[in-house]
Image (tube, rainbow, N blue to C red):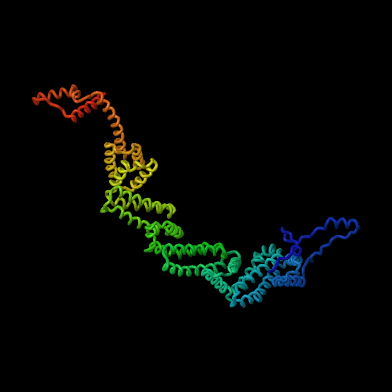
Length: 570
């Protein structure tokens, strides 16, 4: 390994101008000179005002020899300060072009006559990648040292003439005289792809060598990724697609849908880790796109609709985890979730139609409970498997609305279910649980298209509860009316609210009537002595020519009539 020159051997260079710096005499030396009375001063040998051809050749030959020694890793005896000063002199005296072209020729000769020969000799051996990476490492290390020596040329000649900087020039020469010669680039590509294939099959490979080679290809693009893309990335993506296309067919033949999903997840995870470990960062997203297209998009219909393990089977057996994994996989590709949602919709429609069929011998309460159970199941799928996806939620609601209205008795059955709960079904429930049951019923109510039919039956059932005093709680009745009002508006519940007010008024009137009867009707005789009833009996006796006695029911009716007449008059 070539080591950078030590600080004491480097040229002392001004960072702002690139010119050599002159160290000042120490204060101690100044004191000593004054004490001795010496008039001598430190002298710096100036460069000649003009450089003749002989001197230029002499300076260049010294620089050339130094560059060659650096390339051979024999730089320990070089004075980098002296080399820098000589390069500075050539550029300063307008010999920058000669220095630049001379450098280019020296680098080309070395790479062509030594480096490339060594690499070509290793093509058929098992250590080609190691030789290639070592040559690249030696070359870049040497170019860094050469760049430091020729720093002034980089800052003046290169910028003025718009040519490649020294280090970039070295990269371009390596690319053109090593990589693109003697099919080395093709052999490098084949070697890297072969190692990646071996690793995919479980072999342990020299991944650091692959990483170094990829970094070399990126660097050789200088100002772009073109070399890396053309020589490795594009062929790599093509070979990856071919490999996983064959592998996916094997997976489908020998695995269920859930196992296929697991294997695809594993492949994606491994390729992502592989890309992070030794490929250029831009390649990861591209290789994952390839896997998603080949492993997921190309086979998503097949996987979703597998006869014995697809979405229908997962839904039938409540395989929440398997559905969640499949959902996560399909959301990676365009239209993947639509395919899964279509399969779910078909299953839900079939199940729903079977649930609401009219020839089934079930009570209305069981009918509604089956629908509620189905809705609860799919709400759980939505939460645990489909990540509360709005599209899946809308599909579930759409299918429920379709099949629940296939049965013309659905409005009546839902009203009977609520009647059952409001009469006795909620007695054992606390207020919170009772409200939850009513909320579940309201979910089905929202799916009804003929809400006016439901209203008709609900009024009948509510009237019966109120007249027969069968309702478990006035609060529950009010709560149910409030929920219907929130859902459909005040016009929908106006008659129901009036019925409930009449019931409350009736309760008040019943209490008043009871008090009236106790105070005014002591017995049947006393009732007959009432002026209105007495006059009526006298008239009937004359007409029928015999005494008339009213029954108990008639007497009660007359008493009630008198009470309500009194209420009106008052």
